[in-house]
Amino acid sequence: MLGRLSRIYICEEKGKPRELVEIAFLKEDFGMVGDCHSGTGNSNKQLVILLSKDRRDIEESYSNRGICTKRFKENILLDDISLEDLKIGMKVKIGESIVEIKSLGKRCFAECDLVKAQSICPLKEGAIFAKVIQSGKIKVNDSVTVLK
Image (tube, rainbow, N blue to C red; front, side, top):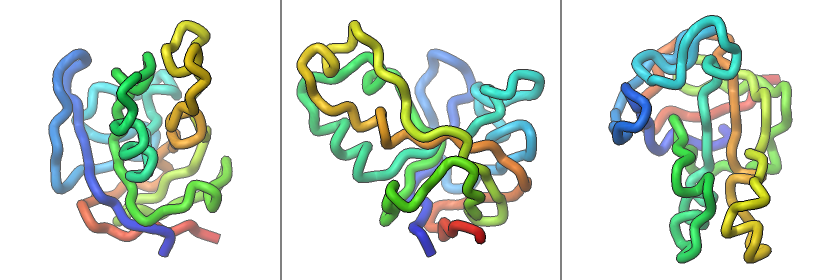
């Protein structure tokens, strides 16, 4: 086991608050069902956003928050996971679903307060973007496992 699923968030409409849920459904070539960032046609919309709990804790501890840390919100918060164990192309089983890691880290913006202060952004390396390659139900406390 690599870690466990700590929290699941769904945002039904852009600009609205996220909703904390216990169970969600990841759909192949779509993303998280019910989330406004999922859909067909645009491959970026099909990505599920994962973040480790330790990176979220670091981000929340900053008094000076950056552009992304103010508005970036994950779908899935992972606990007891080492980001060093993850690589692009890896397949990860979460609950009944399987996702493939497509991208690690979020790019920084020159106008960001964290960049200007030369602070380390927890999202630069901590955000994980994954595509759902096998549909399935996920729930809080599900194990997260890297597939060989």
